[in-house]
Amino acid sequence: MAGPLEGIRVVELGVWVAGPAAGGILADWGADVVKVEPTGGDPGRMFQFILGGDMFSNPVFQMDNRGKRSIALDLTTDDGYAVMDELLAGADVFVTNVRLGGLDRLRLDHASVTARHRRLVYASVTGYGLEGAEASSGAFDVAGFWARSGIAHLLTPDGGDPPFQRGGMGDHSTGLAAAAGVCAALLARERTGEGQVVSTSLLRQGAYTISFDLSITLGWGLTLQIGQRDNMGNPAMNNYTAGDGRRFWLVGLEPERHWAPLARAVGRPDWLEHEHYGTARGRRHNAASLVVELDEIFATKSLDEWAEIFAAEPELFWAPIQSPDDLLADPQFAAAGGLVDVPDGTSTSTMVATPVDFSETAWAPRSIAPGLGEHSEEILRSLGRSEAEIEALVAAGAVRLPSSR
Image (tube, rainbow, N blue to C red; front, side, top):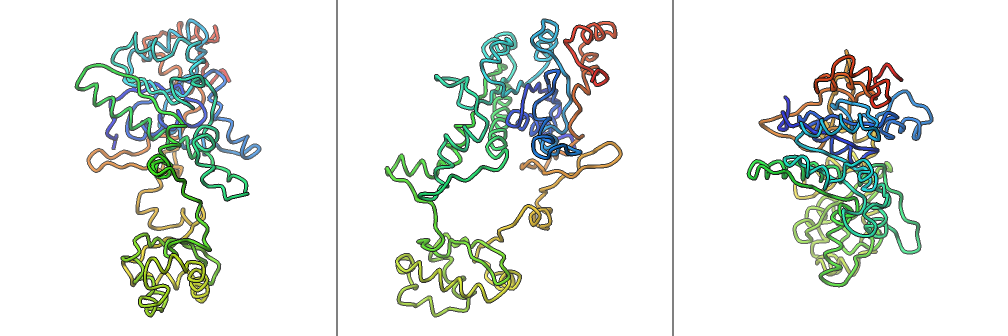
C-alpha cells in the first residue's frame, strides 16, 4: 500500500504547519519526502513545549511530518547549499513555506531554482501570495487565513469579540490545496516535460473558504449576517438542545423537502397546514415563536431518544454537535477511515488520517515523524558522499547528525 505517488521524490523546506502539511499529505500518498531542516530544527518541534509546558510527545508535529526523512542542513553555508541543490536536482517536487525574503537570501527563490532544475515542480505556500507589496510579509494562518480574509469578521456577532481560530485550520486546508496543485503540475509535466511554479496562500485559501459569502457580496453587493438561533429564517436549519443537555443541528435546508419529516418527528403533523408554519414564508415571518416551540419539544427527550425518532425519517438530516472525544469514539468516523495506525518502532501510534483515499492505489502511513537529522547520513550516502566527506560536513557545521545533538 505505497499510495499513488510512489516513486515521486519531494524535498520539503517547511516550517511550522502549512508547508509541512503539504509535504505530509504527499508523504501519506506515497511520495518519498526529504524534510530539510535547519540544524536547530523545524520550529514546529517546539509545539510540545509551547502547548503543553513540557509534554512527553509532540502529536501536532507528528501529524504533519510522519512518513518523512529528515536531514539537518545549514543552508547559509556553501556546503549545506550544495547538498540542498543536489537534492533538488534529483527531486520531482520542492515544497516550501519559508518567507520569500528568506528564500532569496538562501538562493532558493522560485526563479533561481526553476532556472537550474527545469523539470522540478516548485510549490510555494505563502501568507499573501507571490506578488504585491506584502508578498514577503509573515502571516501564520491566524493572520492571513482567519483575520485578513474575512472569516473572523463573518463569524463575529454585532458588538461581540471575534472568535479565536482553532490551531492549524487554515494551514491544513492550504496544505491540502498545495498538495492538489502539486499533483496537477506533475500531470502537466507528463505532457510537457517541464516543471512549473505552483503557488497558494493563506489569504487565497481563506477567501476561497468563504467564497459562498464573497460571491454574494460580488454579485449582489450584500453581506449575509451571522446566524442567530432565535430568529433563523429557516428554523429547520438550526441547532437545538435535547433534554439531556446534548446539542444537535438540524439541516433542513430545503423548506419543502425537509419540513414535513421534521413536523412528523416532533409529533406536530398539524404544522403542515398551520396558519403560520405551513409555508416557508410563514415560518420565516414567525421564526422566533417556532424556535421557542421546537425548544420546548426537544427538551422533552434525550438526544438518544431523538436519534431513534429521527432515524425513522430518512429525509430528516441532522447531526450531533460533538466534542473531540465524541468524534474519536464515533463509529462512523472510524468507518470513514478517519484514524490511522502509524508504525512506531515495535508498536503503532493512532493519528488522524489525511482526508483522501484511493481505491486502486491505497496509501498507508509508513512511519512516525523523524527525529531532527535522523536520516542525514543515509541521505548523504545516497548522494554519493563518503564517510570522510560526511565527517567533514559535520565538522564544518553544514550538517547535523542525530549523534551530534
